[in-house]
Length: 226
Image (cartoon, rainbow, N blue to C red; front, side):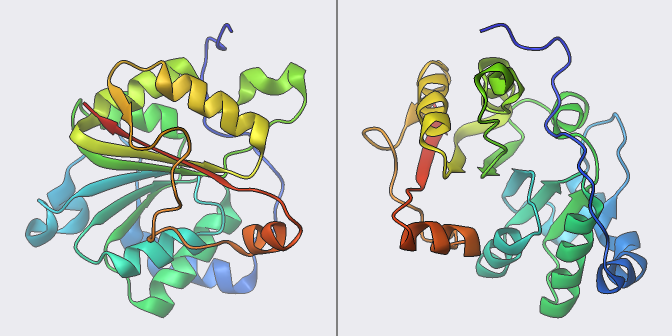
Protein backbone atom coordinates (compact mmCIF):
# COMPACT_ATOMS: atom_id res chain seq x y z
CA UNK A 1 0.00 0.00 0.00
CA UNK A 2 1.42 3.37 -0.99
CA UNK A 3 1.70 5.74 1.95
CA UNK A 4 0.76 9.42 1.56
CA UNK A 5 3.79 11.58 0.76
CA UNK A 6 3.12 13.72 3.80
CA UNK A 7 2.45 11.59 6.87
CA UNK A 8 0.37 13.12 9.62
CA UNK A 9 -0.45 11.57 12.96
CA UNK A 10 -3.81 13.34 13.26
CA UNK A 11 -6.80 14.88 11.54
CA UNK A 12 -8.18 18.12 12.93
CA UNK A 13 -11.56 17.71 14.62
CA UNK A 14 -13.86 20.25 16.13
CA UNK A 15 -14.12 20.33 19.89
CA UNK A 16 -14.93 22.80 22.61
CA UNK A 17 -12.52 23.54 25.40
CA UNK A 18 -14.32 23.71 28.75
CA UNK A 19 -13.79 26.44 31.32
CA UNK A 20 -11.83 24.01 33.51
CA UNK A 21 -9.60 22.99 30.59
CA UNK A 22 -8.97 26.62 29.65
CA UNK A 23 -8.05 27.40 33.25
CA UNK A 24 -5.66 24.44 33.28
CA UNK A 25 -4.03 25.76 30.09
CA UNK A 26 -3.48 29.10 31.77
CA UNK A 27 -2.18 27.66 35.03
CA UNK A 28 -0.18 24.63 33.90
CA UNK A 29 0.44 25.17 30.18
CA UNK A 30 3.58 27.30 30.60
CA UNK A 31 5.30 24.53 32.58
CA UNK A 32 4.02 21.34 30.98
CA UNK A 33 3.39 22.25 27.32
CA UNK A 34 6.68 22.44 25.44
CA UNK A 35 7.25 24.52 22.33
CA UNK A 36 7.91 22.54 19.18
CA UNK A 37 11.44 23.12 17.93
CA UNK A 38 13.25 21.22 15.17
CA UNK A 39 16.18 20.37 17.41
CA UNK A 40 17.11 17.28 19.48
CA UNK A 41 14.90 16.90 22.54
CA UNK A 42 16.62 18.06 25.73
CA UNK A 43 15.36 15.91 28.61
CA UNK A 44 17.22 17.94 31.22
CA UNK A 45 15.63 21.18 30.04
CA UNK A 46 12.19 19.58 29.85
CA UNK A 47 12.12 17.45 33.01
CA UNK A 48 14.98 18.85 35.11
CA UNK A 49 18.53 17.63 35.61
CA UNK A 50 17.60 15.09 38.30
CA UNK A 51 15.11 13.36 36.00
CA UNK A 52 17.07 13.73 32.78
CA UNK A 53 18.27 10.12 32.78
CA UNK A 54 14.92 8.55 33.59
CA UNK A 55 13.37 6.28 30.94
CA UNK A 56 11.60 8.27 28.22
CA UNK A 57 8.26 7.15 26.76
CA UNK A 58 6.68 8.79 23.72
CA UNK A 59 2.88 8.74 23.56
CA UNK A 60 1.17 9.55 20.26
CA UNK A 61 -2.40 10.84 20.51
CA UNK A 62 -3.48 10.68 24.15
CA UNK A 63 -7.10 11.73 23.62
CA UNK A 64 -8.39 13.16 26.90
CA UNK A 65 -5.35 11.92 28.81
CA UNK A 66 -7.03 9.38 31.11
CA UNK A 67 -4.57 6.56 30.40
CA UNK A 68 -1.62 8.95 30.27
CA UNK A 69 -2.24 10.32 33.75
CA UNK A 70 -2.92 6.84 35.14
CA UNK A 71 0.34 5.40 33.77
CA UNK A 72 2.40 8.44 34.76
CA UNK A 73 1.12 8.14 38.33
CA UNK A 74 2.05 4.44 38.38
CA UNK A 75 5.54 5.13 37.03
CA UNK A 76 6.76 8.35 38.68
CA UNK A 77 10.40 7.68 37.73
CA UNK A 78 9.57 7.48 34.01
CA UNK A 79 9.32 10.55 31.78
CA UNK A 80 6.39 10.82 29.36
CA UNK A 81 6.58 12.98 26.25
CA UNK A 82 3.04 13.18 24.91
CA UNK A 83 1.87 14.44 21.51
CA UNK A 84 -1.71 15.60 20.97
CA UNK A 85 -2.97 18.37 18.71
CA UNK A 86 -6.56 18.63 19.99
CA UNK A 87 -6.89 21.46 22.48
CA UNK A 88 -9.67 19.96 24.66
CA UNK A 89 -7.55 16.84 25.18
CA UNK A 90 -4.47 18.85 26.08
CA UNK A 91 -6.54 20.93 28.48
CA UNK A 92 -8.03 17.80 30.05
CA UNK A 93 -4.58 16.27 30.63
CA UNK A 94 -3.26 19.52 32.07
CA UNK A 95 -6.20 19.50 34.47
CA UNK A 96 -5.30 15.96 35.57
CA UNK A 97 -1.65 16.93 35.95
CA UNK A 98 -2.70 19.69 38.35
CA UNK A 99 -5.19 17.56 40.27
CA UNK A 100 -2.76 14.66 40.70
CA UNK A 101 0.44 16.72 41.07
CA UNK A 102 2.13 14.83 38.22
CA UNK A 103 5.63 16.04 37.38
CA UNK A 104 6.73 13.46 34.81
CA UNK A 105 4.56 14.48 31.83
CA UNK A 106 5.42 17.00 29.14
CA UNK A 107 3.12 17.78 26.22
CA UNK A 108 3.89 18.75 22.65
CA UNK A 109 0.77 20.15 20.98
CA UNK A 110 2.15 19.31 17.57
CA UNK A 111 2.05 16.65 14.88
CA UNK A 112 3.88 13.61 16.25
CA UNK A 113 5.43 12.76 12.90
CA UNK A 114 7.30 16.08 12.81
CA UNK A 115 8.32 15.55 16.43
CA UNK A 116 9.72 12.13 15.53
CA UNK A 117 11.50 13.42 12.43
CA UNK A 118 13.02 16.57 13.89
CA UNK A 119 13.22 16.21 17.69
CA UNK A 120 13.86 12.56 18.52
CA UNK A 121 17.31 11.14 17.67
CA UNK A 122 17.82 7.49 16.79
CA UNK A 123 17.75 5.13 19.79
CA UNK A 124 16.52 7.86 22.15
CA UNK A 125 13.30 6.27 23.45
CA UNK A 126 12.67 3.52 25.99
CA UNK A 127 9.08 3.01 24.89
CA UNK A 128 6.26 4.22 22.65
CA UNK A 129 2.51 4.13 23.37
CA UNK A 130 -0.11 4.36 20.63
CA UNK A 131 -3.49 3.66 22.20
CA UNK A 132 -6.71 3.52 20.17
CA UNK A 133 -5.67 5.53 17.10
CA UNK A 134 -8.44 6.39 14.65
CA UNK A 135 -9.30 3.12 12.82
CA UNK A 136 -10.56 4.84 9.65
CA UNK A 137 -13.16 2.17 9.05
CA UNK A 138 -13.82 2.75 5.34
CA UNK A 139 -11.49 0.93 2.97
CA UNK A 140 -10.81 4.07 0.95
CA UNK A 141 -9.55 5.74 4.14
CA UNK A 142 -7.19 2.97 5.28
CA UNK A 143 -4.23 4.91 3.87
CA UNK A 144 -4.88 7.48 6.63
CA UNK A 145 -4.28 4.99 9.42
CA UNK A 146 -1.36 5.88 11.63
CA UNK A 147 0.22 2.44 12.00
CA UNK A 148 1.76 1.84 8.61
CA UNK A 149 5.14 0.61 7.44
CA UNK A 150 6.88 3.95 6.95
CA UNK A 151 5.97 5.35 10.37
CA UNK A 152 6.68 2.07 12.16
CA UNK A 153 10.17 2.07 10.66
CA UNK A 154 10.70 5.59 12.05
CA UNK A 155 9.44 4.54 15.47
CA UNK A 156 11.52 1.38 15.61
CA UNK A 157 14.66 3.31 14.70
CA UNK A 158 14.12 5.67 17.62
CA UNK A 159 13.76 2.93 20.20
CA UNK A 160 16.77 1.88 22.21
CA UNK A 161 17.64 -1.84 21.95
CA UNK A 162 15.20 -3.55 24.29
CA UNK A 163 12.75 -0.64 24.12
CA UNK A 164 9.13 -1.40 23.33
CA UNK A 165 6.28 -0.27 21.09
CA UNK A 166 2.81 -0.82 22.57
CA UNK A 167 -0.25 -0.36 20.36
CA UNK A 168 -3.87 -1.01 21.28
CA UNK A 169 -7.10 -0.92 19.28
CA UNK A 170 -10.71 -1.97 19.66
CA UNK A 171 -11.21 -2.46 15.92
CA UNK A 172 -10.24 -6.00 14.89
CA UNK A 173 -9.46 -5.30 11.20
CA UNK A 174 -7.07 -2.55 12.32
CA UNK A 175 -5.53 -4.92 14.87
CA UNK A 176 -4.89 -7.40 12.06
CA UNK A 177 -3.24 -4.69 9.97
CA UNK A 178 -1.16 -3.53 12.95
CA UNK A 179 0.05 -7.07 13.57
CA UNK A 180 0.99 -7.51 9.92
CA UNK A 181 2.85 -4.19 9.74
CA UNK A 182 4.69 -4.63 13.05
CA UNK A 183 5.75 -8.19 12.19
CA UNK A 184 7.18 -6.93 8.90
CA UNK A 185 9.52 -4.45 10.64
CA UNK A 186 12.96 -6.12 10.93
CA UNK A 187 13.97 -4.05 13.99
CA UNK A 188 10.99 -5.28 16.03
CA UNK A 189 10.22 -8.58 17.71
CA UNK A 190 6.81 -9.64 19.01
CA UNK A 191 6.65 -10.31 22.75
CA UNK A 192 3.72 -12.68 22.24
CA UNK A 193 2.47 -15.28 19.80
CA UNK A 194 0.21 -12.81 18.03
CA UNK A 195 -1.62 -10.36 20.28
CA UNK A 196 -0.31 -9.63 23.76
CA UNK A 197 -2.13 -9.75 27.10
CA UNK A 198 -3.04 -6.25 28.27
CA UNK A 199 -0.05 -4.93 30.24
CA UNK A 200 -0.94 -4.08 33.82
CA UNK A 201 0.00 -0.43 33.41
CA UNK A 202 -2.60 0.26 30.70
CA UNK A 203 -5.97 1.02 32.32
CA UNK A 204 -9.32 0.09 30.86
CA UNK A 205 -10.91 3.15 29.27
CA UNK A 206 -14.60 3.86 29.81
CA UNK A 207 -15.25 3.00 26.16
CA UNK A 208 -13.29 -0.21 26.54
CA UNK A 209 -15.28 -1.22 29.64
CA UNK A 210 -18.53 -0.57 27.78
CA UNK A 211 -17.27 -2.47 24.75
CA UNK A 212 -16.23 -5.46 26.81
CA UNK A 213 -19.69 -5.55 28.41
CA UNK A 214 -21.13 -5.65 24.90
CA UNK A 215 -18.79 -8.43 23.87
CA UNK A 216 -16.42 -6.28 21.83
CA UNK A 217 -12.73 -7.07 21.85
CA UNK A 218 -9.62 -5.06 22.51
CA UNK A 219 -6.26 -6.03 21.03
CA UNK A 220 -2.87 -5.11 22.48
CA UNK A 221 0.36 -5.49 20.53
CA UNK A 222 3.72 -5.20 22.29
CA UNK A 223 6.91 -5.41 20.24
CA UNK A 224 10.49 -4.82 21.39
CA UNK A 225 13.48 -3.37 19.54
CA UNK A 226 16.06 -6.04 18.74
